[in-house]
Image 1 (cartoon, rainbow, N blue to C red):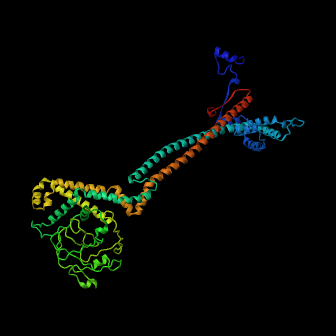
Image 2: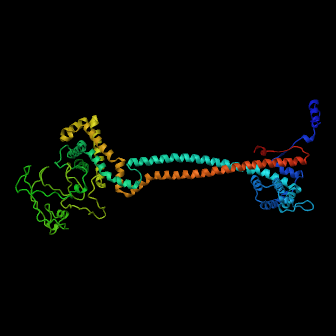
Image 3: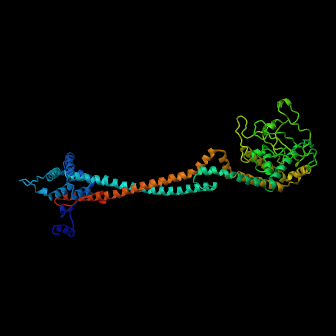
Length: 567
Protein backbone atom coordinates (compact mmCIF):
# COMPACT_ATOMS: atom_id res chain seq x y z
CA UNK A 1 0.00 0.00 0.00
CA UNK A 2 2.84 2.36 0.91
CA UNK A 3 4.61 1.64 -2.40
CA UNK A 4 1.49 2.55 -4.41
CA UNK A 5 0.98 5.86 -2.60
CA UNK A 6 2.31 8.08 -5.45
CA UNK A 7 -0.10 6.41 -7.82
CA UNK A 8 -3.02 7.10 -5.52
CA UNK A 9 -1.93 10.73 -5.17
CA UNK A 10 -1.87 11.18 -8.93
CA UNK A 11 -5.30 9.67 -9.24
CA UNK A 12 -6.77 12.17 -6.82
CA UNK A 13 -4.47 15.08 -7.45
CA UNK A 14 -4.62 14.99 -11.21
CA UNK A 15 -2.04 13.77 -13.67
CA UNK A 16 -0.07 16.43 -15.45
CA UNK A 17 2.30 14.11 -17.34
CA UNK A 18 1.92 10.58 -18.72
CA UNK A 19 3.66 8.09 -16.43
CA UNK A 20 4.34 10.77 -13.80
CA UNK A 21 4.45 9.27 -10.31
CA UNK A 22 4.02 5.69 -11.67
CA UNK A 23 6.72 3.09 -10.87
CA UNK A 24 7.89 0.86 -13.76
CA UNK A 25 7.99 -2.14 -11.49
CA UNK A 26 4.22 -2.26 -11.50
CA UNK A 27 3.99 -2.50 -15.28
CA UNK A 28 3.51 -6.21 -16.28
CA UNK A 29 5.51 -7.74 -19.07
CA UNK A 30 3.24 -9.34 -21.68
CA UNK A 31 4.88 -11.69 -24.16
CA UNK A 32 2.99 -13.25 -27.04
CA UNK A 33 3.69 -16.93 -27.20
CA UNK A 34 4.61 -17.04 -30.92
CA UNK A 35 7.28 -14.35 -30.31
CA UNK A 36 8.57 -15.78 -27.01
CA UNK A 37 11.66 -17.44 -28.50
CA UNK A 38 12.60 -14.35 -30.51
CA UNK A 39 12.00 -12.21 -27.43
CA UNK A 40 14.44 -14.32 -25.39
CA UNK A 41 17.14 -14.18 -28.08
CA UNK A 42 16.73 -10.43 -28.69
CA UNK A 43 17.09 -9.63 -24.99
CA UNK A 44 20.13 -11.95 -24.74
CA UNK A 45 18.41 -14.24 -22.30
CA UNK A 46 19.31 -17.12 -24.62
CA UNK A 47 22.33 -17.55 -26.85
CA UNK A 48 21.69 -17.42 -30.58
CA UNK A 49 23.25 -20.89 -30.97
CA UNK A 50 21.00 -22.45 -28.37
CA UNK A 51 19.85 -25.26 -30.72
CA UNK A 52 23.30 -26.85 -30.84
CA UNK A 53 23.66 -26.77 -27.07
CA UNK A 54 20.12 -28.03 -26.55
CA UNK A 55 20.67 -31.02 -28.83
CA UNK A 56 23.69 -32.11 -26.79
CA UNK A 57 21.79 -31.72 -23.53
CA UNK A 58 18.75 -33.65 -24.76
CA UNK A 59 21.00 -36.50 -25.83
CA UNK A 60 22.31 -36.72 -22.26
CA UNK A 61 18.75 -36.56 -20.88
CA UNK A 62 17.62 -39.46 -23.04
CA UNK A 63 20.48 -41.65 -21.83
CA UNK A 64 19.95 -40.65 -18.18
CA UNK A 65 16.19 -41.34 -18.29
CA UNK A 66 16.89 -44.83 -19.60
CA UNK A 67 19.15 -45.50 -16.58
CA UNK A 68 16.62 -44.38 -13.98
CA UNK A 69 15.43 -47.01 -11.49
CA UNK A 70 11.92 -48.36 -12.19
CA UNK A 71 10.28 -47.06 -9.03
CA UNK A 72 6.74 -45.78 -8.76
CA UNK A 73 7.84 -42.15 -8.40
CA UNK A 74 9.98 -42.12 -11.52
CA UNK A 75 7.40 -44.05 -13.56
CA UNK A 76 4.68 -41.57 -12.53
CA UNK A 77 6.87 -38.61 -13.55
CA UNK A 78 7.48 -40.09 -17.00
CA UNK A 79 3.77 -40.81 -17.51
CA UNK A 80 2.66 -37.33 -16.40
CA UNK A 81 5.19 -35.51 -18.57
CA UNK A 82 5.15 -36.37 -22.28
CA UNK A 83 8.44 -34.47 -22.73
CA UNK A 84 11.36 -34.44 -20.29
CA UNK A 85 12.53 -30.82 -20.06
CA UNK A 86 14.57 -28.81 -17.56
CA UNK A 87 11.89 -28.50 -14.90
CA UNK A 88 11.12 -32.24 -15.05
CA UNK A 89 14.84 -32.91 -14.68
CA UNK A 90 14.84 -30.85 -11.47
CA UNK A 91 11.95 -32.96 -10.14
CA UNK A 92 13.90 -36.13 -10.92
CA UNK A 93 16.99 -34.64 -9.26
CA UNK A 94 14.94 -33.80 -6.14
CA UNK A 95 13.70 -37.40 -5.91
CA UNK A 96 17.24 -38.75 -6.30
CA UNK A 97 18.38 -36.54 -3.41
CA UNK A 98 15.96 -38.38 -1.15
CA UNK A 99 17.57 -41.74 -1.92
CA UNK A 100 20.56 -43.29 -0.14
CA UNK A 101 22.71 -42.25 -3.06
CA UNK A 102 22.58 -38.65 -1.81
CA UNK A 103 24.87 -39.60 1.06
CA UNK A 104 27.75 -40.25 -1.31
CA UNK A 105 29.70 -36.96 -1.50
CA UNK A 106 33.31 -35.89 -1.87
CA UNK A 107 35.26 -33.40 0.22
CA UNK A 108 33.82 -30.49 -1.70
CA UNK A 109 30.23 -31.60 -1.06
CA UNK A 110 29.68 -32.80 -4.60
CA UNK A 111 27.66 -35.92 -5.28
CA UNK A 112 29.66 -38.95 -6.33
CA UNK A 113 26.76 -41.37 -6.89
CA UNK A 114 26.19 -42.40 -10.49
CA UNK A 115 22.68 -41.01 -10.97
CA UNK A 116 23.03 -37.83 -8.94
CA UNK A 117 26.34 -36.97 -10.57
CA UNK A 118 24.80 -37.56 -14.05
CA UNK A 119 21.71 -35.43 -13.37
CA UNK A 120 23.79 -32.68 -11.74
CA UNK A 121 25.75 -32.30 -14.96
CA UNK A 122 22.51 -32.23 -16.98
CA UNK A 123 21.03 -29.42 -14.89
CA UNK A 124 24.25 -27.38 -15.13
CA UNK A 125 24.24 -27.87 -18.91
CA UNK A 126 20.66 -26.61 -19.04
CA UNK A 127 21.41 -23.54 -16.97
CA UNK A 128 24.46 -22.63 -19.02
CA UNK A 129 23.35 -19.78 -21.34
CA UNK A 130 19.76 -20.40 -20.16
CA UNK A 131 19.24 -23.16 -22.69
CA UNK A 132 16.33 -24.44 -20.65
CA UNK A 133 14.35 -21.24 -21.40
CA UNK A 134 14.76 -21.81 -25.15
CA UNK A 135 13.69 -25.41 -24.72
CA UNK A 136 10.63 -24.39 -22.67
CA UNK A 137 9.62 -21.76 -25.24
CA UNK A 138 10.01 -24.32 -28.03
CA UNK A 139 7.86 -26.86 -26.17
CA UNK A 140 5.15 -24.29 -25.41
CA UNK A 141 4.92 -23.18 -29.02
CA UNK A 142 4.92 -26.77 -30.27
CA UNK A 143 2.21 -27.86 -27.84
CA UNK A 144 -0.06 -24.89 -28.44
CA UNK A 145 0.28 -24.68 -32.22
CA UNK A 146 0.70 -28.32 -33.21
CA UNK A 147 0.39 -31.08 -30.63
CA UNK A 148 -2.81 -30.15 -28.83
CA UNK A 149 -4.67 -28.95 -31.99
CA UNK A 150 -3.64 -32.17 -33.78
CA UNK A 151 -5.09 -34.30 -30.98
CA UNK A 152 -8.28 -32.23 -30.95
CA UNK A 153 -8.63 -32.55 -34.70
CA UNK A 154 -8.13 -36.28 -34.38
CA UNK A 155 -11.04 -36.44 -31.94
CA UNK A 156 -13.20 -34.29 -34.24
CA UNK A 157 -12.33 -36.43 -37.24
CA UNK A 158 -12.93 -39.61 -35.28
CA UNK A 159 -16.26 -38.32 -33.96
CA UNK A 160 -17.34 -37.50 -37.51
CA UNK A 161 -16.38 -40.98 -38.64
CA UNK A 162 -18.40 -42.47 -35.79
CA UNK A 163 -21.39 -40.33 -36.82
CA UNK A 164 -20.99 -41.44 -40.45
CA UNK A 165 -20.84 -45.07 -39.38
CA UNK A 166 -24.01 -44.65 -37.33
CA UNK A 167 -25.82 -43.15 -40.35
CA UNK A 168 -24.53 -45.92 -42.63
CA UNK A 169 -25.60 -48.56 -40.13
CA UNK A 170 -29.11 -47.07 -40.04
CA UNK A 171 -29.28 -46.90 -43.86
CA UNK A 172 -27.95 -50.45 -44.18
CA UNK A 173 -30.51 -51.68 -41.66
CA UNK A 174 -33.29 -50.10 -43.75
CA UNK A 175 -31.85 -51.65 -46.92
CA UNK A 176 -31.63 -55.06 -45.26
CA UNK A 177 -35.27 -54.81 -44.30
CA UNK A 178 -36.23 -53.80 -47.85
CA UNK A 179 -34.22 -56.63 -49.45
CA UNK A 180 -35.68 -59.17 -47.04
CA UNK A 181 -39.16 -57.95 -47.92
CA UNK A 182 -38.37 -58.30 -51.64
CA UNK A 183 -37.06 -61.81 -51.06
CA UNK A 184 -40.13 -62.78 -49.05
CA UNK A 185 -42.44 -61.30 -51.70
CA UNK A 186 -40.66 -63.19 -54.49
CA UNK A 187 -40.89 -66.44 -52.55
CA UNK A 188 -44.55 -65.78 -51.77
CA UNK A 189 -45.24 -65.03 -55.44
CA UNK A 190 -43.92 -68.44 -56.44
CA UNK A 191 -45.24 -70.16 -53.34
CA UNK A 192 -41.87 -71.43 -52.11
CA UNK A 193 -40.40 -71.24 -48.57
CA UNK A 194 -37.03 -69.95 -49.80
CA UNK A 195 -34.74 -72.47 -48.11
CA UNK A 196 -33.33 -73.88 -51.36
CA UNK A 197 -34.65 -71.57 -54.06
CA UNK A 198 -33.39 -73.33 -57.17
CA UNK A 199 -34.60 -76.78 -56.10
CA UNK A 200 -37.92 -75.32 -55.01
CA UNK A 201 -38.35 -73.54 -58.35
CA UNK A 202 -37.62 -76.77 -60.20
CA UNK A 203 -40.24 -78.46 -58.03
CA UNK A 204 -42.87 -75.95 -59.21
CA UNK A 205 -43.07 -77.75 -62.55
CA UNK A 206 -45.18 -80.37 -60.80
CA UNK A 207 -47.92 -77.74 -60.40
CA UNK A 208 -47.95 -76.92 -64.13
CA UNK A 209 -50.57 -79.55 -65.13
CA UNK A 210 -52.96 -78.25 -62.49
CA UNK A 211 -52.49 -74.64 -63.64
CA UNK A 212 -52.92 -75.59 -67.28
CA UNK A 213 -56.09 -77.48 -66.40
CA UNK A 214 -57.48 -74.25 -64.98
CA UNK A 215 -56.75 -72.62 -68.34
CA UNK A 216 -58.54 -75.44 -70.15
CA UNK A 217 -61.47 -75.17 -67.74
CA UNK A 218 -61.70 -71.47 -68.51
CA UNK A 219 -61.54 -72.25 -72.23
CA UNK A 220 -64.32 -74.84 -71.98
CA UNK A 221 -66.51 -72.71 -69.71
CA UNK A 222 -70.06 -72.58 -71.14
CA UNK A 223 -68.61 -73.72 -74.48
CA UNK A 224 -68.10 -70.04 -75.31
CA UNK A 225 -64.67 -70.30 -76.92
CA UNK A 226 -65.74 -73.26 -79.06
CA UNK A 227 -68.80 -71.32 -80.26
CA UNK A 228 -66.62 -68.32 -81.05
CA UNK A 229 -64.27 -70.52 -83.08
CA UNK A 230 -67.21 -71.98 -85.01
CA UNK A 231 -68.56 -68.50 -85.63
CA UNK A 232 -65.15 -67.39 -86.94
CA UNK A 233 -64.82 -70.43 -89.20
CA UNK A 234 -68.32 -70.13 -90.65
CA UNK A 235 -68.02 -66.38 -91.16
CA UNK A 236 -64.62 -66.68 -92.84
CA UNK A 237 -65.87 -69.45 -95.14
CA UNK A 238 -68.98 -67.46 -95.99
CA UNK A 239 -67.09 -64.30 -96.90
CA UNK A 240 -64.61 -66.24 -99.04
CA UNK A 241 -67.40 -68.05 -100.86
CA UNK A 242 -68.78 -64.87 -102.48
CA UNK A 243 -67.34 -63.66 -105.79
CA UNK A 244 -66.74 -60.03 -106.65
CA UNK A 245 -69.92 -59.93 -108.72
CA UNK A 246 -71.97 -61.17 -105.78
CA UNK A 247 -72.37 -64.71 -106.99
CA UNK A 248 -71.43 -67.64 -104.79
CA UNK A 249 -68.51 -69.85 -105.46
CA UNK A 250 -68.75 -73.60 -105.70
CA UNK A 251 -69.42 -75.09 -102.29
CA UNK A 252 -66.25 -76.11 -100.58
CA UNK A 253 -65.62 -77.50 -97.16
CA UNK A 254 -65.02 -74.71 -94.64
CA UNK A 255 -61.38 -74.74 -93.52
CA UNK A 256 -61.06 -74.68 -89.74
CA UNK A 257 -60.05 -71.42 -88.09
CA UNK A 258 -58.06 -71.40 -84.84
CA UNK A 259 -57.66 -75.17 -85.12
CA UNK A 260 -55.63 -75.73 -81.96
CA UNK A 261 -57.89 -73.51 -79.87
CA UNK A 262 -61.00 -75.32 -81.13
CA UNK A 263 -59.45 -78.72 -80.50
CA UNK A 264 -58.43 -77.97 -76.91
CA UNK A 265 -61.77 -76.33 -76.13
CA UNK A 266 -63.49 -79.53 -77.23
CA UNK A 267 -61.09 -82.33 -76.25
CA UNK A 268 -59.09 -80.73 -73.45
CA UNK A 269 -55.35 -80.67 -72.82
CA UNK A 270 -54.56 -84.12 -74.19
CA UNK A 271 -51.08 -85.53 -74.72
CA UNK A 272 -49.17 -85.13 -77.95
CA UNK A 273 -49.36 -88.88 -78.43
CA UNK A 274 -53.15 -88.86 -78.30
CA UNK A 275 -53.37 -85.71 -80.39
CA UNK A 276 -51.27 -87.29 -83.14
CA UNK A 277 -53.23 -90.52 -82.97
CA UNK A 278 -50.22 -92.62 -82.01
CA UNK A 279 -51.99 -94.50 -79.24
CA UNK A 280 -53.10 -97.94 -80.37
CA UNK A 281 -56.91 -98.02 -80.68
CA UNK A 282 -58.79 -100.54 -78.62
CA UNK A 283 -59.35 -103.88 -80.35
CA UNK A 284 -62.67 -103.49 -82.18
CA UNK A 285 -65.36 -106.09 -81.73
CA UNK A 286 -65.75 -108.39 -84.72
CA UNK A 287 -68.95 -107.40 -86.43
CA UNK A 288 -71.15 -109.74 -88.37
CA UNK A 289 -70.69 -109.30 -92.09
CA UNK A 290 -73.50 -107.38 -93.63
CA UNK A 291 -74.88 -106.21 -90.25
CA UNK A 292 -75.86 -102.59 -90.22
CA UNK A 293 -74.85 -100.18 -87.47
CA UNK A 294 -77.03 -97.77 -85.56
CA UNK A 295 -76.93 -95.19 -88.34
CA UNK A 296 -78.25 -97.57 -90.90
CA UNK A 297 -75.00 -97.98 -92.86
CA UNK A 298 -73.02 -101.19 -93.20
CA UNK A 299 -70.51 -101.88 -90.42
CA UNK A 300 -66.92 -102.54 -91.40
CA UNK A 301 -65.10 -105.47 -89.95
CA UNK A 302 -61.32 -105.87 -90.16
CA UNK A 303 -59.51 -109.13 -90.24
CA UNK A 304 -56.23 -108.34 -88.45
CA UNK A 305 -54.74 -111.73 -89.30
CA UNK A 306 -52.21 -113.53 -87.18
CA UNK A 307 -50.40 -110.53 -85.70
CA UNK A 308 -47.94 -111.76 -83.09
CA UNK A 309 -48.14 -110.10 -79.72
CA UNK A 310 -44.39 -110.28 -79.16
CA UNK A 311 -42.45 -107.04 -79.56
CA UNK A 312 -40.87 -107.25 -83.02
CA UNK A 313 -39.43 -104.41 -85.04
CA UNK A 314 -41.30 -105.15 -88.31
CA UNK A 315 -44.97 -105.27 -87.41
CA UNK A 316 -45.07 -102.04 -85.36
CA UNK A 317 -47.93 -99.60 -85.68
CA UNK A 318 -45.78 -97.14 -87.59
CA UNK A 319 -44.64 -99.79 -90.06
CA UNK A 320 -48.18 -101.05 -90.58
CA UNK A 321 -49.33 -97.52 -91.29
CA UNK A 322 -46.64 -97.08 -93.90
CA UNK A 323 -47.80 -100.25 -95.72
CA UNK A 324 -51.40 -99.15 -96.22
CA UNK A 325 -52.48 -98.39 -99.78
CA UNK A 326 -55.04 -95.60 -99.74
CA UNK A 327 -56.02 -95.56 -103.34
CA UNK A 328 -54.44 -94.90 -106.72
CA UNK A 329 -50.84 -95.26 -105.64
CA UNK A 330 -48.06 -96.94 -107.48
CA UNK A 331 -47.75 -100.45 -106.07
CA UNK A 332 -44.06 -100.46 -106.67
CA UNK A 333 -43.60 -97.51 -104.33
CA UNK A 334 -44.49 -99.62 -101.34
CA UNK A 335 -42.04 -102.37 -102.21
CA UNK A 336 -43.16 -105.90 -101.57
CA UNK A 337 -45.01 -105.05 -98.37
CA UNK A 338 -48.62 -106.24 -98.50
CA UNK A 339 -51.22 -103.49 -98.89
CA UNK A 340 -54.73 -103.43 -97.51
CA UNK A 341 -57.48 -102.65 -99.96
CA UNK A 342 -60.34 -100.98 -98.12
CA UNK A 343 -62.68 -101.28 -101.07
CA UNK A 344 -65.21 -98.62 -101.93
CA UNK A 345 -67.43 -97.52 -99.14
CA UNK A 346 -68.74 -94.30 -97.72
CA UNK A 347 -67.76 -93.07 -94.29
CA UNK A 348 -70.78 -92.03 -92.31
CA UNK A 349 -71.18 -88.82 -90.38
CA UNK A 350 -70.26 -88.36 -86.75
CA UNK A 351 -71.08 -91.36 -84.68
CA UNK A 352 -70.20 -93.92 -87.36
CA UNK A 353 -68.20 -96.75 -85.89
CA UNK A 354 -64.63 -97.65 -86.87
CA UNK A 355 -63.50 -94.40 -88.53
CA UNK A 356 -59.77 -93.84 -88.95
CA UNK A 357 -57.57 -90.82 -89.64
CA UNK A 358 -53.84 -90.68 -90.27
CA UNK A 359 -51.68 -87.96 -88.74
CA UNK A 360 -48.72 -86.48 -90.59
CA UNK A 361 -45.80 -84.60 -89.09
CA UNK A 362 -47.54 -81.19 -89.26
CA UNK A 363 -50.61 -81.38 -87.04
CA UNK A 364 -53.79 -80.07 -88.64
CA UNK A 365 -57.36 -80.58 -87.62
CA UNK A 366 -59.63 -82.58 -89.89
CA UNK A 367 -62.63 -80.37 -89.23
CA UNK A 368 -63.80 -77.48 -87.11
CA UNK A 369 -65.36 -79.82 -84.57
CA UNK A 370 -62.05 -80.92 -83.16
CA UNK A 371 -61.59 -84.28 -84.85
CA UNK A 372 -58.28 -86.06 -84.71
CA UNK A 373 -55.69 -84.31 -86.91
CA UNK A 374 -55.13 -85.83 -90.33
CA UNK A 375 -52.12 -85.92 -92.59
CA UNK A 376 -51.84 -83.76 -95.66
CA UNK A 377 -51.64 -86.75 -97.98
CA UNK A 378 -51.66 -90.49 -98.40
CA UNK A 379 -47.94 -90.66 -97.89
CA UNK A 380 -48.08 -89.32 -94.32
CA UNK A 381 -46.49 -91.63 -91.78
CA UNK A 382 -46.93 -91.94 -88.05
CA UNK A 383 -43.82 -91.19 -86.04
CA UNK A 384 -43.19 -93.00 -82.84
CA UNK A 385 -41.59 -91.51 -79.75
CA UNK A 386 -37.91 -90.95 -80.16
CA UNK A 387 -38.05 -90.39 -83.95
CA UNK A 388 -37.38 -86.93 -85.35
CA UNK A 389 -36.26 -85.25 -88.54
CA UNK A 390 -32.60 -84.55 -89.00
CA UNK A 391 -31.65 -81.33 -87.21
CA UNK A 392 -34.91 -81.09 -85.23
CA UNK A 393 -35.17 -81.63 -81.46
CA UNK A 394 -36.82 -84.84 -80.40
CA UNK A 395 -40.35 -84.13 -79.15
CA UNK A 396 -41.83 -85.64 -76.04
CA UNK A 397 -45.07 -87.35 -76.95
CA UNK A 398 -46.05 -87.62 -73.28
CA UNK A 399 -46.30 -83.82 -72.96
CA UNK A 400 -49.70 -82.23 -73.16
CA UNK A 401 -50.63 -79.75 -75.86
CA UNK A 402 -50.22 -76.76 -73.56
CA UNK A 403 -46.92 -78.07 -72.19
CA UNK A 404 -45.32 -78.49 -75.63
CA UNK A 405 -43.83 -75.27 -76.96
CA UNK A 406 -45.14 -75.53 -80.54
CA UNK A 407 -48.74 -76.35 -79.72
CA UNK A 408 -48.87 -73.91 -76.81
CA UNK A 409 -47.62 -71.13 -79.10
CA UNK A 410 -50.23 -72.12 -81.67
CA UNK A 411 -52.91 -72.03 -78.96
CA UNK A 412 -51.86 -68.52 -77.89
CA UNK A 413 -51.68 -67.35 -81.52
CA UNK A 414 -55.17 -68.70 -82.12
CA UNK A 415 -56.45 -66.77 -79.13
CA UNK A 416 -54.93 -63.54 -80.46
CA UNK A 417 -56.24 -64.24 -83.95
CA UNK A 418 -59.73 -64.89 -82.60
CA UNK A 419 -59.52 -61.77 -80.45
CA UNK A 420 -58.52 -59.66 -83.47
CA UNK A 421 -61.42 -61.08 -85.56
CA UNK A 422 -63.97 -60.50 -82.80
CA UNK A 423 -62.70 -56.97 -82.21
CA UNK A 424 -63.03 -56.17 -85.91
CA UNK A 425 -66.46 -57.79 -86.02
CA UNK A 426 -67.56 -55.81 -82.98
CA UNK A 427 -66.47 -52.57 -84.67
CA UNK A 428 -68.31 -53.45 -87.90
CA UNK A 429 -71.50 -54.32 -86.05
CA UNK A 430 -71.32 -51.14 -83.96
CA UNK A 431 -71.08 -48.70 -86.91
CA UNK A 432 -74.55 -47.44 -87.80
CA UNK A 433 -73.46 -46.18 -91.24
CA UNK A 434 -72.95 -49.73 -92.47
CA UNK A 435 -76.18 -51.03 -90.99
CA UNK A 436 -77.85 -51.60 -94.38
CA UNK A 437 -74.87 -53.47 -95.75
CA UNK A 438 -74.55 -55.53 -92.61
CA UNK A 439 -78.27 -56.33 -92.67
CA UNK A 440 -78.05 -57.49 -96.28
CA UNK A 441 -75.00 -59.57 -95.42
CA UNK A 442 -76.74 -61.07 -92.44
CA UNK A 443 -79.81 -62.08 -94.48
CA UNK A 444 -77.79 -64.30 -96.81
CA UNK A 445 -75.32 -65.52 -94.22
CA UNK A 446 -75.44 -68.94 -92.53
CA UNK A 447 -77.64 -69.34 -89.51
CA UNK A 448 -74.77 -69.18 -87.01
CA UNK A 449 -73.68 -65.81 -88.39
CA UNK A 450 -77.24 -64.48 -88.42
CA UNK A 451 -78.01 -65.37 -84.83
CA UNK A 452 -74.72 -64.01 -83.42
CA UNK A 453 -75.49 -60.53 -82.15
CA UNK A 454 -73.25 -57.70 -80.99
CA UNK A 455 -73.75 -58.71 -77.35
CA UNK A 456 -72.67 -62.26 -78.23
CA UNK A 457 -69.50 -60.92 -79.83
CA UNK A 458 -68.76 -58.89 -76.70
CA UNK A 459 -69.22 -62.00 -74.57
CA UNK A 460 -66.86 -63.91 -76.86
CA UNK A 461 -64.25 -61.16 -76.47
CA UNK A 462 -64.54 -61.27 -72.69
CA UNK A 463 -64.05 -65.04 -72.71
CA UNK A 464 -60.95 -64.79 -74.94
CA UNK A 465 -59.47 -62.01 -72.81
CA UNK A 466 -60.04 -64.05 -69.65
CA UNK A 467 -58.24 -67.09 -71.09
CA UNK A 468 -55.33 -64.95 -72.33
CA UNK A 469 -54.99 -63.25 -68.96
CA UNK A 470 -54.96 -66.58 -67.15
CA UNK A 471 -52.52 -68.23 -69.56
CA UNK A 472 -50.13 -65.28 -69.65
CA UNK A 473 -50.10 -64.78 -65.88
CA UNK A 474 -46.53 -64.40 -64.55
CA UNK A 475 -46.80 -67.56 -62.46
CA UNK A 476 -47.70 -69.85 -65.38
CA UNK A 477 -45.23 -68.18 -67.72
CA UNK A 478 -42.39 -68.49 -65.24
CA UNK A 479 -43.16 -72.13 -64.46
CA UNK A 480 -43.26 -72.92 -68.18
CA UNK A 481 -39.93 -71.15 -68.69
CA UNK A 482 -38.49 -73.04 -65.73
CA UNK A 483 -39.54 -76.33 -67.27
CA UNK A 484 -38.26 -75.44 -70.73
CA UNK A 485 -34.91 -73.89 -69.78
CA UNK A 486 -32.63 -74.81 -66.91
CA UNK A 487 -30.64 -71.63 -67.58
CA UNK A 488 -33.77 -69.56 -67.03
CA UNK A 489 -34.36 -71.42 -63.76
CA UNK A 490 -30.80 -70.65 -62.67
CA UNK A 491 -31.16 -66.95 -63.59
CA UNK A 492 -34.52 -66.70 -61.83
CA UNK A 493 -33.11 -68.36 -58.71
CA UNK A 494 -30.16 -65.98 -58.82
CA UNK A 495 -32.44 -62.94 -59.14
CA UNK A 496 -34.44 -64.08 -56.11
CA UNK A 497 -31.50 -65.09 -53.93
CA UNK A 498 -29.61 -61.95 -54.89
CA UNK A 499 -31.88 -59.98 -52.55
CA UNK A 500 -30.96 -62.36 -49.74
CA UNK A 501 -27.27 -62.22 -50.67
CA UNK A 502 -27.27 -58.41 -50.65
CA UNK A 503 -29.02 -58.42 -47.28
CA UNK A 504 -26.38 -60.78 -45.87
CA UNK A 505 -23.61 -58.62 -47.33
CA UNK A 506 -25.13 -55.52 -45.75
CA UNK A 507 -25.45 -57.33 -42.42
CA UNK A 508 -21.76 -58.23 -42.60
CA UNK A 509 -20.88 -54.63 -43.46
CA UNK A 510 -22.87 -53.49 -40.41
CA UNK A 511 -20.84 -55.85 -38.23
CA UNK A 512 -17.62 -54.46 -39.72
CA UNK A 513 -18.79 -50.88 -39.17
CA UNK A 514 -19.72 -51.65 -35.56
CA UNK A 515 -16.22 -53.07 -34.97
CA UNK A 516 -14.59 -50.01 -36.58
CA UNK A 517 -16.84 -47.68 -34.61
CA UNK A 518 -15.83 -49.36 -31.37
CA UNK A 519 -12.17 -48.94 -32.33
CA UNK A 520 -12.74 -45.25 -33.03
CA UNK A 521 -14.50 -44.83 -29.69
CA UNK A 522 -11.50 -46.43 -28.01
CA UNK A 523 -9.26 -43.98 -29.88
CA UNK A 524 -11.28 -41.07 -28.54
CA UNK A 525 -11.24 -42.52 -25.05
CA UNK A 526 -7.44 -42.83 -25.16
CA UNK A 527 -6.85 -39.43 -26.81
CA UNK A 528 -8.87 -37.33 -24.40
CA UNK A 529 -6.63 -38.13 -21.39
CA UNK A 530 -3.58 -37.34 -23.54
CA UNK A 531 -5.00 -33.91 -24.31
CA UNK A 532 -5.81 -33.27 -20.66
CA UNK A 533 -2.31 -34.34 -19.60
CA UNK A 534 -0.65 -32.24 -22.31
CA UNK A 535 -2.74 -29.16 -21.47
CA UNK A 536 -1.91 -29.52 -17.80
CA UNK A 537 1.81 -29.93 -18.50
CA UNK A 538 1.75 -26.95 -20.90
CA UNK A 539 0.13 -24.65 -18.32
CA UNK A 540 2.57 -25.82 -15.66
CA UNK A 541 5.51 -25.10 -17.95
CA UNK A 542 3.99 -21.71 -18.79
CA UNK A 543 3.86 -20.69 -15.12
CA UNK A 544 7.39 -21.97 -14.54
CA UNK A 545 8.78 -19.89 -17.40
CA UNK A 546 6.83 -16.84 -16.22
CA UNK A 547 8.27 -17.31 -12.69
CA UNK A 548 11.85 -17.58 -13.97
CA UNK A 549 11.50 -14.47 -16.15
CA UNK A 550 9.85 -12.59 -13.31
CA UNK A 551 12.89 -13.28 -11.10
CA UNK A 552 15.16 -11.96 -13.83
CA UNK A 553 13.13 -8.71 -13.98
CA UNK A 554 13.07 -7.95 -10.22
CA UNK A 555 9.81 -9.73 -9.55
CA UNK A 556 7.86 -7.86 -12.21
CA UNK A 557 4.81 -9.71 -13.37
CA UNK A 558 5.42 -11.62 -16.63
CA UNK A 559 2.48 -12.89 -18.67
CA UNK A 560 2.75 -15.21 -21.65
CA UNK A 561 -0.37 -14.39 -23.65
CA UNK A 562 -2.04 -15.83 -26.74
CA UNK A 563 -3.76 -19.11 -27.58
CA UNK A 564 -2.10 -20.79 -24.63
CA UNK A 565 -4.65 -19.21 -22.31
CA UNK A 566 -7.60 -20.65 -24.28
CA UNK A 567 -6.57 -24.30 -24.21
